[in-house]
Amino acid sequence: MSEHFEAQGIVQDFEKRIIYSVQQVFQYTDKKELEVFLNQKVQKDSPPQTFVIKTRDSKGKKETSIHKVTGLQYIVLKDKVVILKAIQLVKKTILIKENKAVFKD
Image (cartoon, rainbow, N blue to C red; front, top):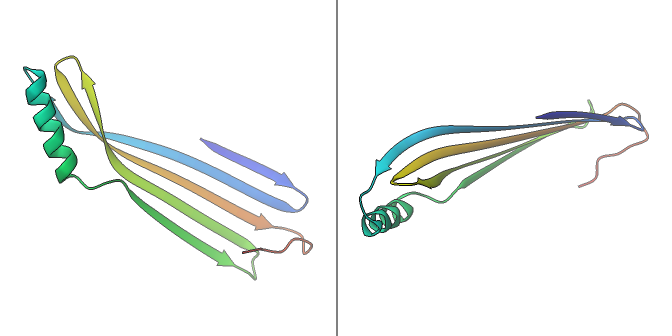
């Protein structure tokens, strides 16, 4: 998904991507086996990680921020558990065309 917006000398571009990949498929025979499996995976796997990168070019009047979140999702489908790795990337760029606007922290 992407979006482009321009008003009063400010140009803003927004881009969002989500990528899923199957890491593992586990088949279980009873609910207790499923509970043990999920408890082990949740304790072993790390929580979602977030990365933020911001760059600012005052001379070029451009600011870019990138937000990346990675983590695992567990989906139970009948007698199977599908483990997905999810990556979400959001990029936002602001460009000031006119001298009237100023970056604010």
